[in-house]
Length: 303
Ligand SMILES: C[S@@+](CC[C@H](N)C(=O)[O-])C[C@H]1O[C@@H](n2cnc3c(N)ncnc32)[C@H](O)[C@@H]1O
Image (tube, rainbow, N blue to C red; front, side, top):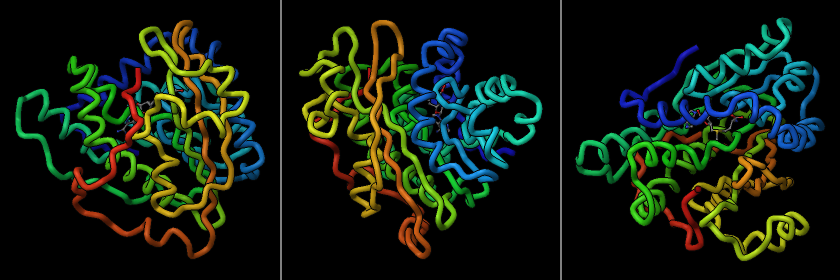
């Protein structure tokens, strides 16, 4: 199934290059991340459920085999079909039959509008026609937005060689609107009674990117320490949920051992769609001004 609107392919090509890196190595190194996400999904996932994994990519950090074993249907919503093909190929044939790739740019091409204007030296958009409509079939018992919130713009900016203060300025300007629209899409895709799980790489430890606390200290008491970190707040789905008035039922935290010298603290936020709730999220927004949303004061660009 296809729903792609990313003609410039800047974000897509950048994400596809990232997704293809270190395969094999990542599957092994990110095993603990799959286990951590599974401990959140396991109690939410009913036998025969309909599931959407948004930004699952190669599913190196997603327990796809365990999900597909229990679910009736799993839709992999991502614009990188090379990555979703890899994820499907790794499954046993019977599980694979239940997993479908849905090729979709969740920003409706808006990230690429910004990136193409930057590449071409054109005027940057002051507003974006961001889609907030449900993803895929939009009737899922469980929808997981998996660590793509920081990657909507960032991967493309790096591909264009935009770093440092300019990169930060562009993310402050555009990411709040891109993130809000995606959070709304994820929430709008949940059937009444179902759950959404938003997984976010909240803060990074890497060389040249010093945090005021050690990652171990944060994970020992995340709720009390996370606001001391240099974070990716402009892309934070939980901050959007709070702004939209969506109740967060639970949060979980874990370490993402991305590379030997680079790791992230991940925060996962669970919401439930009650009957009749979320009506405001389903309202179509045709054109979103990008300068009207609050940029986060303590935010840094991802590494
Ligand atoms: C950091 S990766 C998440 C890790 C991934 N779950 C894995 O295990 O490899 C971000 C994912 O979001 C996808 N993505 C980024 N921007 C997207 C967009 N605009 N539409 C759809 N997918 C997007 C990328 O293709 C990638 O698969």
